[in-house]
Image (cartoon, rainbow, N blue to C red; front, top):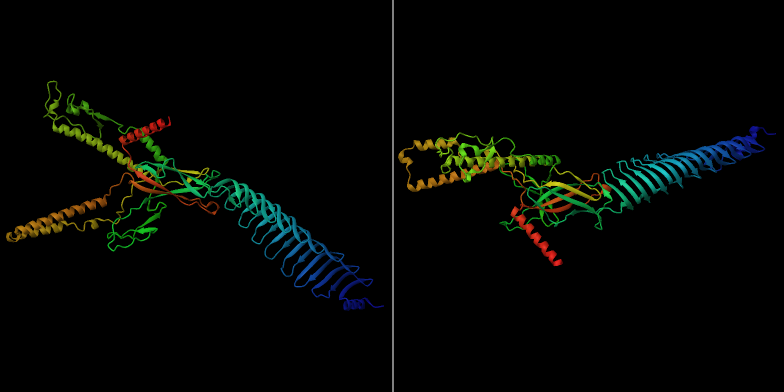
Length: 586
């Protein structure tokens, strides 16, 4: 009878098996090499089949180690995929991943959850290569059912999924703070839903393919009167705008967009013809002014804006009346401007002119405006002791007129000071926010033109042509030292010299006036009458749905305020036109 070694050697030669046998069958522990060198098994055998714990080595580094049942990989095991390097640890059935298991890939992806014959199905947790994590239902290797997805960029979605896409009701929280709560279809917002954008924009309503069904496309100026807005000099005004969709309807379902306001003044067209009769150059976005000979600075760039009204405009400032300054104005208007002690000139013996005289009106002024003096001794008195009306001297009349002029001058200075304080309290316009599709800019103000830039003007630059006192004294000494024969000149020469001196005197006076104008520029009280353009631009940051509305241009005309007579005539004409319209209807 052959020994066990001889039997093993015979089995090893014939069947390529080395191990335990029973009744000429592989039974117990043994190593089996298949005809296909790609496979090899090491483990438990039972009556000639793999059964129990074993290790099936698969070529190119792959293998399975775990439970075998009647020759099949079944039960709990550990699988290494040779080509990809992925690993799986979990339940198997008929050689497939089935049941609960953990699959890890070299790319960083991993799935831990339920498997059905090699596919992710049921509840599980999936982590993608970028770091995103999904926890919820799966079907056929895809997200399906209720689930929560945390994306790699920080976005988060809680809701329903259909075949790996957001579908049904869900709540999306974006990493920037935007929140959408509503219906989804095909991975985009579709159906009823509401959004709260990080910029402050809110919308509640119907969505179609990821966009609001009532989405604004442009701005519209709300004007109850004519298209061109007329504003009187020195008066604030308001602008009302609304967001409209492609059908011209107001998008009342949206709120929160922000808009800023700017202004420009219509550019004057030069009527002078060029000497070379050149054709005009095309309009540019910016125009550089000429460099002054006395200015060391570079050329000043003046922005030029193309308007839809057929002309270009130069950028101009626009301001807003602050609420604090408005309250201060109300307080100043309620207070008496002539508060304080007043002096009644009526009781003054110096200004007592008798009844019926035109100068006998009551004149009041502040004690700080005029200083009372004792009556002059030259003034004659009548029998009652009062001053005679016909002997109201010129000095007293001058005093009264001077007091009146001082009062008027002080009032004008107060008004001028108040205007300057008002201009200094104006602020840059605050952005306006849309509410239910509408926005308003209140208390806007077109300021006076800015003062000219005199930073480059110096005393030396404005007095180059003036004659210095030293030169003047030298010329006088030279003429004094000359002999009478040298000083005497013919009549024609003397007249020519006098004309030249008169001309030089006029030119020096003109230079002094120009110097005074440049060094002490006059500040305009109101904006100049003319045509202005108000530009309203959206500044929602960040833009809502990656887009902003186009700019709105509103034409504005600054006019000189009408007098009381003109206003009364306008009212009369309007009332007459109304009466005519009523008579026609009746």
